[in-house]
Length: 137
Image 1 (cartoon, rainbow, N blue to C red):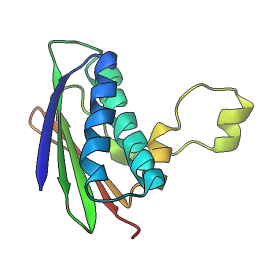
Image 2 (tube, helix red, strand yellow):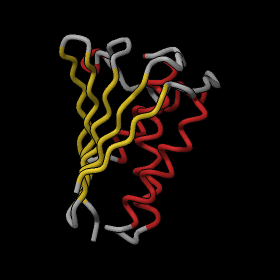
Image 3 (cartoon, helix red, strand yellow):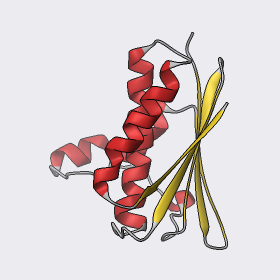
């Protein structure tokens, strides 16, 4: 089953995304921890796109497609903002982040730990982040 949600690039819309994902996943898995982890991962990607790719411009939007079945889920998040080059991403050292008391910078690391697979691609002006997760049960 596929579900779609379009939100404008305002931080206040992140709650809409979290609620949407929670509602859709609850029909397929009762594992609250797993649902909360996936909500966190998608929220992190969407927050990055809203803030860093689209600069909180309410005239821009991100689209979230959720394809879910009894085995797992695929999240496809698209926007037309600034491109993110995932190949250049270097995971930070957690010890250095803590030592420097740096706020932020570990979101993608968290997303990669939660999801089974994370992909970023860009074609013309369309950026796509695809997240894959198999249900544990």
